[in-house]
Amino acid sequence: MKKLYQSLLFFCLPLALTSCEEGVFEPQSANCLEIKQEDSEGNAWEKVYDEQDIIQQRYLKDQALQYYYSYVYDDDGRVSEIQYLDAQDAPYAPSEFITYDEEGRWSKSTVTYPNGNVSIYAAEYDSQGQLQKVTSSTNKSGTVTQNYTVTYTWLNGNNVSRTYESASQRQEIQYEFDLDQENKRRKEQKKVAFLSLAVAYNQNMFKRVKTVSTSGSTTTTTESVYDYEYNEEGYPSAVTRTTTVNSDASSTSTTTFLYNCD
Image 1: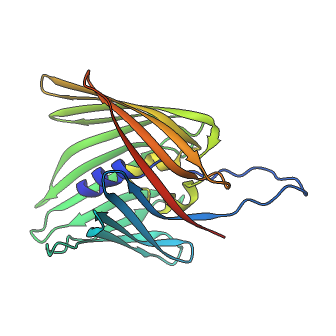
Image 2: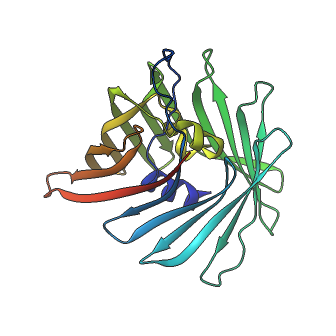
């Protein structure tokens, strides 16, 4: 789950599909499914679908497959199991099993390891049904130990801040959004947007992210600014991210997106 959290948080951008009233004579917007992301550093994500459902995500480095995730859906069309396979001949990782609350929202993920230890990720929601807190814990022989918590703050349907806290580290992330640009990839991604992709539920596209990480006496501040290009349907076709860490010189990375639009 840690690897899933880190990799998806890095590669996947916030995703949203908001509805709006359309006049009788206005053109209908096409539905686009993202099939590939690729950045200027040789990292790529490929997505495989069964009609509208993502059934597999593959990570490639310099066009070589590294690992992938497969998704199993229940009778209600929700992801019930995530299977991970390392393509570099490493052993299979245990599956992650997903459960939902009475409102149909993701409520818990569990991973059981061969030694019997169980990793648990549990979600809490606010009165508006927005993700408010995630708690990570480990059950070892009946003893449950909390690993970390992640808390979320929302404004106008956007996750404007996120705070990660563990015994040894604290990380605060602030997001700024382009309120004039809806996040049209939301519908596609929210099916698999559990822990790391809570930002995927945003109504709008984010344009700036500031992260302050503290570990012991060391504090690191990272700021990223996002500049998008969009296709005719309003989906991002490219994004250039300019990142500055502390007072170091900034670096730039560009990610392109490929879609299949109906």
